[in-house]
Length: 451
Image (tube, rainbow, N blue to C red):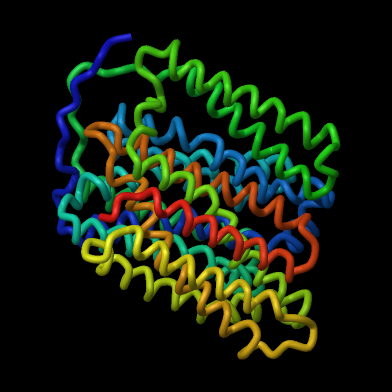
């Protein structure tokens, strides 16, 4: 294994707006694919003959690969260049989307969804490298993070509406096929807008760290996912979780004592923003699930909305999130991360506490729309600020590693949050737990530097 000397190359040869539009579109597509499939699941099950258990893997296969492989994806962006990884991720994601849209057997669709997750795991950290290296001015970087975060949040909510429209108007295949032309456009834009990162001697990937870290995260997330159909003490749940914990412990030993060039240098956690930011992003994953996923279920199961109407019912919250995220980006350099996170957490606690009062006889405008707008404002204040805080202190040449770590924390937090909240009881309990997560984020934000 040899050391490497990396000369930071400015990845922007196109106008700043084009670079920002590129990474925002990539983030939008990645998050869109998490939610767009949900509405199409009944049609997929009917056409391909999925069993109820097998159908869950159309969603879980994507999420498992996405969460499990982001750490090596982030490190690869540092080692092999952000443009190369961005283009490779887009190519894999688009090819897998084509395979999913043409699938005629359940097994083929599940494999294609796993491949999509791998492509997303390559894409997401690379977009953060581009943001950190392209926008060096604090004000410009804050605005870029606001736009990037807003694009991801919009993708999560728009997916329900677009998925319903495509499934109803065309067929379920188009929820996957739509990615193919979009991917082709983004690949062309990436090749045009970004230059190749030039390196001296190339460093090899920490194979032992990649294997133990990826396997540990995958086993942990898999075990948590299984809790939806089995008790927490079941062997199908406890076994993978225990294996995941052991593998992650081995990963820490490898990174601290074995690897000469670790995939995740543990010294990164000595940076206060990285350590506190990742802890808060882990909790924030559960907050986001509590908002978008369980509010959609509340609208359908309790208020009797259809799937498409539920998506439309969340649209005002999505618009609020986008607007507030852009506002937070402008405020961040002046107000500081801690202030914005505390303000966002206050909105989360108040909004989820209000939403917990909703029931069968509730009115949409006063009992759901009002609190979801408040929660969306809290998410808009907190999420871009958390991502900026968790990645701003990245050492030169390790932006992809730090970005992959932040994305992994948020994704794993969402997977664990979904499983925990799904077994928590009624919607009132779910929303009260989400309020508690908001309070915990506020407490952790006190560990951040004031600016």
